[in-house]
Length: 338
Image (cartoon, rainbow, N blue to C red):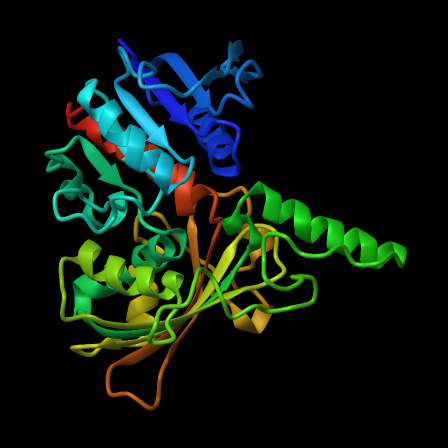
């Protein structure tokens, strides 16, 4: 017997990826309920050979729903997430609405899947995309030598800001190629073409951006360790899909680059691509459309007694969002917890 699965935000970039991931994988589904705003209601999507009409999201949308995957913005999740949970659905939310709530688990299945089993509100939060790929790469190393401190610099694709951001960068590129005037930016504060923008989210009073704060706090919650020190600089780059991250990690105990590669080569959800002498290292264009978190450029940091540098790349729409949410549902299904 299969589940009734709702996707809230079915027409968005992540919602579309959720549909694609569900199509590819084996979660048993009897009925799919694509939900969106009134503007998108009436459109159709095809899922497993069946044409399904998108319906408007209302408080009555969740009757009989077993799993509700949310990716339509924080305010939508705050309003309708509890409604779906009260109707009996297990809510897996891809926004920041519930991530830091004490009674909502923040889950990456390869790292802390068991946390999903303790969801008293029937709401489980998907971490931020940049956090997900970082903790997947760190988890096997943390188990071996315990992470003490992480300095992370991100190189984040425009897809992290949604489908309209992809369109904006594409239009800027087309205009440049045609010698036409550059269209003014609407999604970002500056044009993204040929630019690196050291701002993702609003700035807080201390100068940290919201995205940077997410990486700090979410990492501690996922690892259930408030003593881990994390400092982040998050940067938007003119890449369509696929976030890159440079990690400098200090461990409590010794961990050589060779041992780290051994651990990463067998870690769930990780693919080691580390042959710099052959120009092989993780690239965004290779990660796009793929499930793994790719790790390479693993090397010792000669300035620290127990330090490593790593380069980490993943498709932010898949493992950074849609895939992780579906994997949470699969984990719960395997434990008869849906």
